[in-house]
Image 1: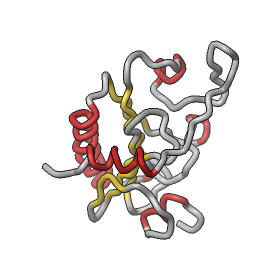
Image 2: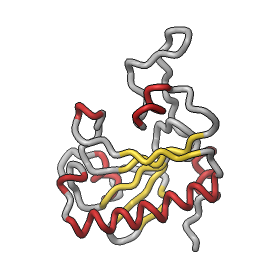
Image 3: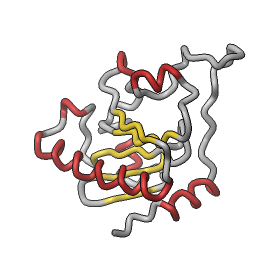
Image 4: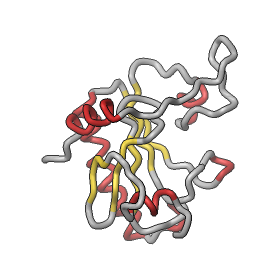
Length: 154
């Protein structure tokens, strides 16, 4: 779809740190991760959200999601993992190309809003000093280290 950032990544027009790729799906490290190892899984074929996907594509998504989530769990050994897909703006969807966040959690979540309903930090959330935390961009060094750990070999 014209103008879709994920379609540009899928088409090779924008760079990304690829964790997994097959004919139908692409998984990348989130450029602004909410935790170490935050991965985004997306279908290569554009669909605005899960409700817009075919039943067959949704079934394949589930299988691929399980595989990648298991790799994240084994490689990074988090205390937990959040699997989240926001549908429409009211739910927090910012990129209107179906994608699933695979978010490793280490220790107790410092974001009570995210812990409660399983979503990324809201700009409404503030830490105990009243400061809205800013997610920083993933560095090449961090990405390289994570990609080595997440090699998708079975």
